[in-house]
Structure formats: C-alpha cells, structure tokens
Length: 241
Length: 326
Image (cartoon, rainbow over all chains, first blue to last red; front, side):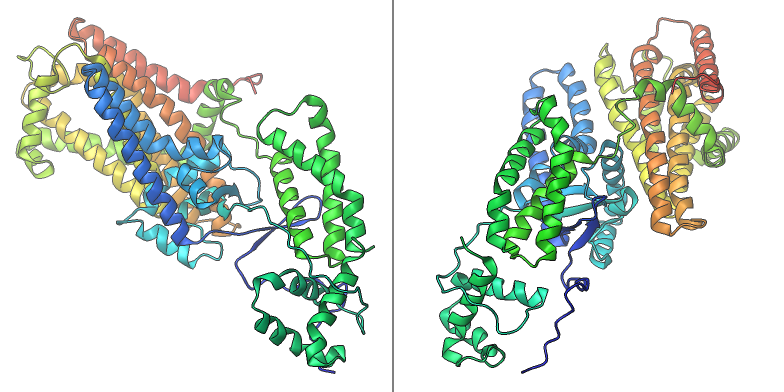
C-alpha cells in the first residue's frame, strides 16, 4: 500500500493553494471569498466608463435644447456621474456597479459584510490616486502585488472586490452498488472520492479510467474494476437516496 | 450520519431559509420573518459546520456556504454614520472632528493661506511676477471678469447675463472636484495634499495680488469675500483630511501601516463630508449673492465679515456643550 499523505481526521485543512480568502464569522464558520484579479476589474471599469460616457452624451444632447438651464443641470450631472456613479451603485445595489454586475463581481468589506457609505466613498475618492501618474498605473501595481488584489483605495477603505457566488448544479452520481471502503478514509480522501464520482460526467472516459487506475492497488482491485469500485464507495458514503 | 440522510432531514429548512433570504434581499420580509431570521441563520451555520466536519461532498457544502454568506450579509452590517445622524453631525460632530484633528488643520491652513497671502503680497509688490505664475491669456481673462467697467462680476463676458443657475452647477463641479483631488492625493504620503494646497494658494494669491495692484481690487474683494469664508476654509479642511491620510502612512504609531491608514481614512472621510457641505453653501452664496451687482461693496464686505465670523464660531465653538445632541 502506498503511503498516503492524509491528515488525521481532526486536523485543520491546509490553506488552499488558490487565492481564496477566509473570513471567520462570529458563529465560527469560515466563509471563503474569491477575490477578483486585475483583468476582470479592469474590464468592469471599462464597461462602466463606456456606460457613463454614453449616458452623459445622451443627456448633454437632450440638455442642449434647454439652453442655460441645461448648462447648469449639465455641470451638476457631470459632477454626479463622475464622482458619485460608483458610490451610489455600490451602496444601493449590493456592491455592484453595472460593469461589475456584468462580470459577476461585487464589492464587500474585508469581513464579508456589505459595503457602506463611508467605505464606498473612501475607495472611490481615492480612485484619483490609483489613476496616477497615468492610466491606473499605481492602482494596477498595487493590485498585482497584493495577495487579495487590492488597489490603494481598497486598502484605505478596507474593502475587497470578489466574485459573486454562482448557483451550483448538482450532477447525478453514476449508478453503482453501494460499497464500503477497504480502509478508513480520511476527510480529504472521502471528499476526493465523492468529487471523483460527481465530476465523472465532465471527464473523458479515458481520463476517468486513468485516474481510477492510480487507486487500483490501494483498493486491492483489478485496474479495470477501479472505476466501478470508486463509484460504489462514493455511493456508500452518500448513503441511501 | 450519511450525507443523503442529513440532506433529507434538513432540506426543508434550507429551502425555507433561501426563500426568506430572497425576501430580505429585496426588502420585502415581514417583521415576523425577520425576527426568526437570526435563529435560522445560526442553525444553518451549525449544519454547515457539521457538513464540513463529516466530509460531505462539495456539492452539498458549497451551496450551504453560499447560503451562509448571503445570510451573513443580511445579519451583519457596518452601521453607516453618515445618513442617519446627519443633523448631529452638522450641529456637533463636524466641528468636533475639526478640533480633534487640529494639528492637521493647522498645518493645512498655514500651507494654504500662507502661500495665498505670500503670493498675493509678492505679486502686489512685483507686478510682473504674475506672468511667471500663470499664462498671459488667463490673466487677461481674469481681468475681464473683474473689470469695473463691464458691470458684471466674476464671470466671462459672454456669460454675463442673469443665469446664476449655470454658475451654481459649474462652481459645484469645479470646487468639489478640487477638494476631492486635494484630499485623495494625500495618500501619497501627504505630498499630494501639500502640493495642491500650495498650488491653489499660489494661483488664488497671484490673481488677488494682480487685480488689487491694477485697481480692480474693490470689485474682486467684494466678490470673493462672501463665499470665500466657506470655500477657502473647505479647501484647507480637505487638505487637512489628506494630510491625515499621509501622516497615517508616515507615522503609523503602534499599528501596522494598513490598519493605521484604514482608521485615518474612516475619520477623514467624515471631514470630507463636512467639506462637501461647506462647498455646497459656498457655491450657493457665490452664484446668488456674490455675483449680484446691486448691493454696495460696503454691504458685501459686512456680509462677508459676518460669514467669516460665522465659520470661525462654528468650527471653534459648536458642539462643545455637555448636552450636545449625540
């Protein structure tokens, strides 16, 4: 039997290799948040910029007919759109400006709670510094070197841009006779076996066989039987449906 | 307990919780439902902890985690101190904050008013200096705006007529933009704020000195004295807020720099809210009072002096009482 690097059952899981960011809630639950990196954020900003330009262009066309009143209204609008667009959307629309909404992003506080007026105001006012010296250079550098991709405004405001959770669709387990594992499975191994059964439909059959064959020896079955054996163990773990 | 048994037993709770979350997120939940929410949320947390501990499949744990995250966002919030306590902030909170941050306010005030008065004096004494500070056509434009012969005040000739509303919009856009810049650039270790404070002081001072020198002084000073009380102090305060950010980075004290910056930012953004209020008032005065040519310069000076006194009294005196509104 090959030595497994399994952890004892009660040991805490090692920190994930990806960029997930854990928030511990007062209930003692670790909530994983997925911070969004530079490219999706830049895209979202570009979309917002285009949208603002479009709205302003249309409004100025309309206001042009109103003469002087239109000019006054126009500069007020320019002010509102250039400084308040992000703040209003972030606070009133659950942390999502239209661009962020399209890309599935949202802004939250560091502790996973919704972003408030003062935090949103800070991060959007300090956008001015992120844009220095040109083309968001400071913001991009700060974003690229930070473990959770914060730009300077995010650091000062204590906010985070994360991916919104998408609803998951649960696959059917392949039909198999429920079996017991020949040895005690650790927590990670248990989840790995379940994951193998659940994600089988997304893999080619050659890859499925290849993966299962790796485990043929510890499971003490013939390599051809390994897939069925693993599916059976997964069924057994899941219990009667 | 096997995963499927666990699921069958609790599925109904989870669906009910998700439904309630939907209602809460759209702001339509009844008081009855809201009251039961924290208990349900904690039960869900327990289920999630159990599911993780027992190594159930990701397809069960992840949706539960998602539900908990949504519930967490409904249950826990940072209370925002801006909207709810606006009146208390205006009456007491803002002047208190300004006094609490007096070193920064003092430094920003010295930088801004110092460079303003210094440049004004220099330009008055050496009139040619104004052309090395700003380009000639800008000087000519300024002269056009305050020419006593033109019969209007503080605006371009072609925009002369009655439309105060246009200028109101323009002043808001322009002045609050400057204040925001002065504040935000403080993040660069305070250097940006120092630069903008001195730069704006320099420009305004140069114009003031030049116009006084060529004899347009009465027109100019009677125009600016009224709204200047709010506008100039607002720019100095915006600079103070920016310096506060920079100082948190230079000398964070016992805190890590990130943490010190976060704390400083939370305070300085309140200061910026007060600054916005000041600038709104300033734009209003500037468009509807300062630009009027009817009142004699003397009455404008008197009103201006009263406004400066008001700002001074407000910043130094308001909110000192023991029973000030909380």
